[in-house]
Image (cartoon, rainbow, N blue to C red):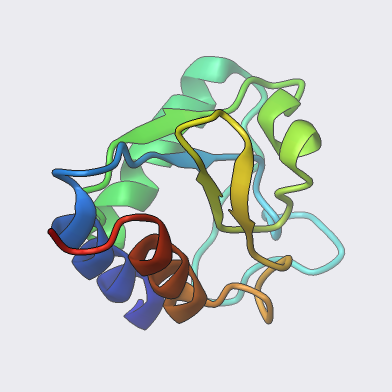
Length: 124
């Protein structure tokens, strides 16, 4: 939860100079998998409507106010960005990747994201 709070702070700091979105992708540790999450029971959604509902619940539970997008059931966004299980990106004004964090959870470094935004969007 600490990471979500820090992400929210970064969003609040830069939201007037950058568009922010977080993309909900497939569950990394759904119920019934080899390594299900211990702290919560989430079934892997089998329809897009189910995925939308799980994404909404997730956003609410972690108190993240960043606008949310939801990946399709083919996991197109996750595949395009090698985002599974989680990852941070900054897309520059030239539509190119300006910062690509390492794969999470160990590579999910919110302070690196903040540093990249500070370089790209210096204070006026």
